[in-house]
Length: 448
Image 1 (cartoon, rainbow, N blue to C red):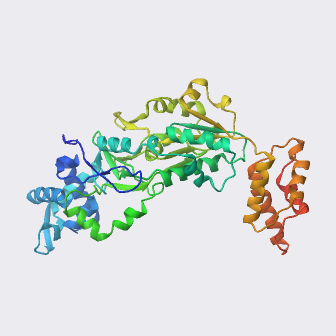
Image 2: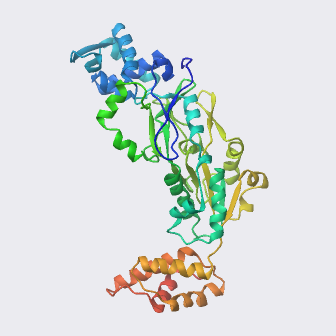
Image 3: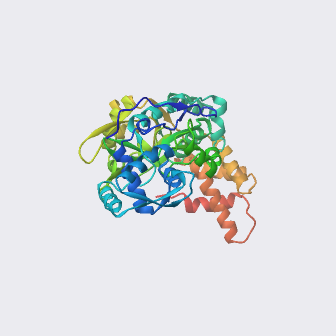
């Protein structure tokens, strides 16, 4: 269990729109850790990694050395560790090794919890920091919104719908026929959040009801490049030895953009428990806090839409969720991300009015007009090194789009890439002609 501690403090972090950085703790109490948890971390680390210098141990646990030193002193008095070498400048340069008794204690600690890594932050600090860097406060204007959408051809009405949705930080339902850029639009919203929203701070792990829950996931969280440049070996050493620096237990990352599709199930929205190691991994929507969580192809998941929406109906309303540990204990976490639902299906066939009311913004994506279609078509043709050919578009409309098939923005890319493949196969220059488009369409557009 964590000890009572004063309210955490934060350092002002330079950078546009960036939240305050958590400040390094001055004591074990400020770190929100108990002596038993600290010593168990030290024992498990030495058990797994062998002997270590005091400074390397502090660096590995991401704690100031003066805090780690308290644990070292306690374990040395308990005859669990011993000094096997080092310089005379102090414990920071001593090499520490487990004794036989220490290895027994470490083995017992590993059986109770096998987590080895940066020390966890208290749950209340994680909650406080998450609310400091919510998506709701991100500045969004028509001028800055267009940049991440520059590769898409969208009508002005689409920006008028997306802008307020992003500003609100609430959930967005994007729906319409397939092949018209819903997923690309959702990903562009994520790019906007990365560019305009600034970076955020995530803990490697937090402590809830005596259990460790890992949050930082290198597969979905991208460390901030500026922080990485400043976070060289000399800087890390300085931060561990001096006061009033950034808490190393937190990672500065770009706002996360997490995308799920048909593979999503209810288990992915719960804590992932490792029974052998006895600690947890945060679910996807917790890892997405401060960023974007896109559910693509909504309605085609392994879990039914009704079950999925029932799981989230209260978090969408109250902006927090409850997670359950293996022992049945529950704890509350923020539900602070811009959640996007993207679907090709009719929303009325997926959700009821009660749920639609909780999704603040509904954005319908229509099939492109001919003007928009031509802009997309010629944009793709230019990218592939082809010239313009109005006769090719005339053919597509006369043969397909005016005969009942709805035009799709994705048709432009798919058809022209087939034309490119035909030309390369025949070892001829890549050109755009009516006949080549007709040949590509005959194999691409199925007519059953």
